[in-house]
Each structure stands twice: as structure tokens, then as C-alpha cells.
Image (tube, rainbow, N blue to C red; front, top):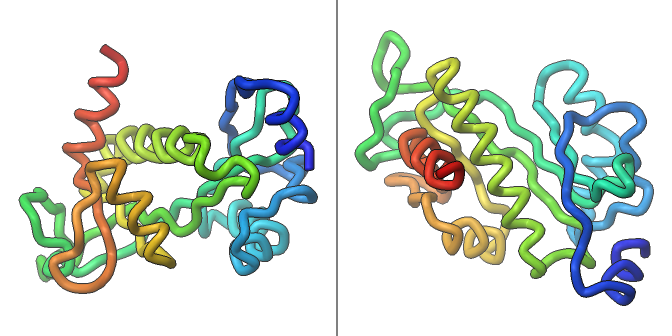
Length: 186
């Protein structure tokens, strides 16, 4: 694997670039360790991105911009306000029981890069994207349904994600995302 050989040659990794998925994005060497996610990335990500079902963003080292080392997929969903809880100002639909949310549907890193803080950098880009989109179009929360206890721990340890009042999901209020982005800029 290229990423593993990169680690053997150098203590520091090149900068990560983010861009929307395109036909030239290369998932051939991408393996995150979850066969379902690997399969979705190779077979469905581009189709879902092109049809606007998901906004798929890929991460690549700046010296190999087409070779995918990580990615995330965001989608707009409708969530029950009662599931979220917390002190979040929601822009509910007419019946006030549901609101639009941005869902982090998929996020994965190349297996050889997991545990090296590269995933945290990708999550930071997710939060920047959410802060921008949420404030532009009125999306009050980013939600994630962790697929494993390991994933739940990853999101919870990075702060800002709160547990659902009902259900197994996690959510981040827009207010927190905007404060996080503003603090990073200062």
C-alpha cells in the first residue's frame, strides 16, 4: 500500500487536500477495514454524488490528489425534534415535530492511516462544511449514526457531539460547529 510505504519513509505526512468526488477520484487502493463502506465507496459514491443524494468529499495527499485516502458523504434528512433533545434552536416544519438536519452518512479513512489523527482532520473538514451549509440554508444540527462502538467513541471523544435524547444517534448543534470554526480561525 502506498500509504503504508509513505509512513515507513517519513515521519510526517503530506498535507491533505479536500475536494468533491469526481470520476478521476481513485478508490482502487482504498481499504478502510469495513467491507460495506469500501463497497459503497467503489460502487455507489459517484452515482449518489452525481444524483445529489449525497455530497461526497474526498481527502487526498497533496502530492497524489486523485488517490483517495479518506472520504465523507453528507445528506439532508428530516429528523424528529424529540430525538435530538438538548438546547438546539430548530427550524421545524409546519407540525413542529420534525426538522431538517445534515447527516454524516459515511466517513472513512484508509486503514493504514487510522489512529494517526488523519480521521480527526477529515472530521474537522466535515464540521467546517456543516458550519458553512448550516448557516447558509438553516440546518440546525449535524447528525451521525455510528455503525460501531469504536465509531461512537471516535465522535464522542472529539467533542461537540451530544447523544440523542431518544435513539442511538449523536448530533452536533450548528451553534457549536460555528464556534469551533471561529475558534480555529482566530
